[in-house]
Image (cartoon, rainbow, N blue to C red):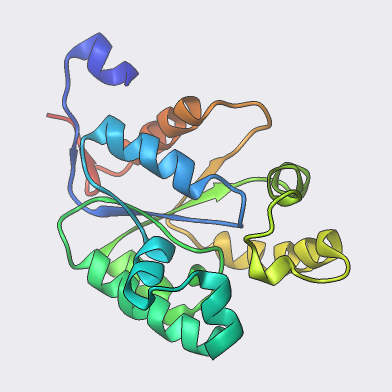
Length: 189
């Protein structure tokens, strides 16, 4: 990333960076780029849940319900936070649980990828992998979820605004610049 190139610094991640935000905000894509730039592992709580269950998130929702999924999600997030510092992408609903928010702030740092509704809809409208959007009017559903969740995402430790047309790498750079404001999280050697 830019900081390394210009100053030869190798920043050290001291706490796990937990990316939170709406479906389509870029948590997985930006998370991979961020982990690569910081030379730390990338972890995805949804992928870990799917691997453990040998089922997709949609299948878990259909078979066991959202409450069961949320319990498993909390267990997986705690396990991942107890591992060495990394970048962790979470599902859109993970941060809604107060227990998850407290655990993330205590053991890591929550970074909200803040994308507006128009950007999110452009990214998710053609995907059928979003169980919460399997409704007669997915845009209205997304809008309702957005209105309900944004005030909770705003509680995150840090926020980075996602802009239309910003590349994944540029967004990762914005996250790194924001993390630099927290020497307890990212230390420049």
